[in-house]
Length: 85
Image: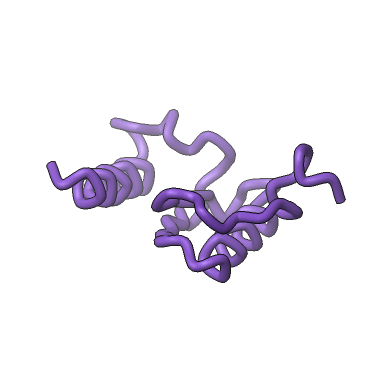
């Protein structure tokens, strides 16, 4: 229950725009989804990228796994939009 240990217990108001991404085969996928919902409920500009079949650290598949490449492209587009670049 200590917010210093689990962001799922912290006050998330005031966070900058936040993107939360996870793979559906991620051990902590449920916590990722819960965190994304809590950020959104706190009024934070939030986006999610869920990678079907993705495992923990799915980005290591960049250049070899099409789903990882697609997720990375989505994340990059989101960052460019937020930074106006």
